[in-house]
Image 1 (cartoon, rainbow, N blue to C red):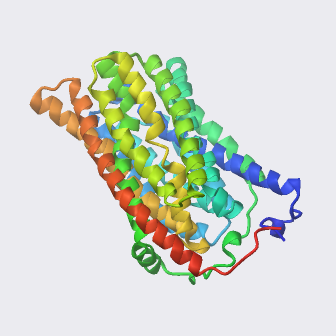
Image 2: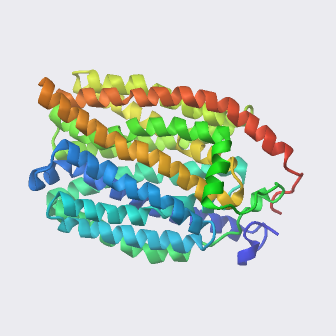
Image 3: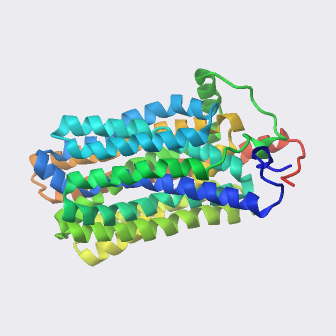
Length: 443
């Protein structure tokens, strides 16, 4: 008997590996479109701002707060569904909803209507990540989980790369409104394909030998997670970093346009290369190295996050404060690699700290906190600080430069918190090992 025998896949067969790979590939594609949708507003900020007459504060709210409030808060109840119903169905339906709302965003007549459509996108996307993470955790054993999560997480840099390059081209050829329509239509076409490629694995196969906590209510589940100090500190650390990460991801394109005079096509290409190549390398290496080094000391899964997030701060400060366009681009490329390297390890660590029937819910809690503080406040607060510096201190185009620099204090604090989390993680894993009985892996 193996993890996939319950769905008719022969034990130890090549087909078993094929089912895993196809499912991971399908989840990767879906997540790629997730991040393409996130990219649209960032790269189209300039034509949308001009056409609809929006301020930096309104743009920050569109790319952050209005989306994050609904995306993060709905993740909890939707994750409860993912822990109880077909996760493959939930992922496909989520994709169809957010793609439809993305396509409709091209009809926006002003700030209010664009907010409405972005809320629709948030509602659709809220169900995808918790269900996807839960599926991957049931497809792969703990010692391969960070690598699998990082492989899936490559959708973020790939989605950003495709988003920046394709949307930059679409905007030039068709305009910003039709860019939304084209991306939405492609996402809708992918939904039935995803249903065909993903199989529903049995829950908790790799934790069969562990003592499982009975199914809990939402309040009891939140209490369970709060009492797990390692989980609490890890989430706090990445939450703080998320503030600066989303500020950088949202405002880097306007920064290079305003402060270094790059055109929209030039910025689109630059963001595609940095987010795609740099982000992909950082994301994969973060998970791969964490798994390899954790063989010696499991705290490396958390140390990897602390070190790369901490290194992001001086590199990004050099990017924003230098007057040299070439040096700024070089530092931005290095920052793109460092700031995302935590992705695979944080998913692996948080999934290993909870029982199998709480995986989607725990991931939703991570998303709730990360996105409300990071996505919700990072771009918005940075835009507001930029407006403040421009209006009241005469900073001009340098207002955005200094606002982004100030946001990096959150990453510095997050790195310190994660070093503390590493000690707590070792204690939690020792406690988990003591509660486990010897078990055999899949035959």
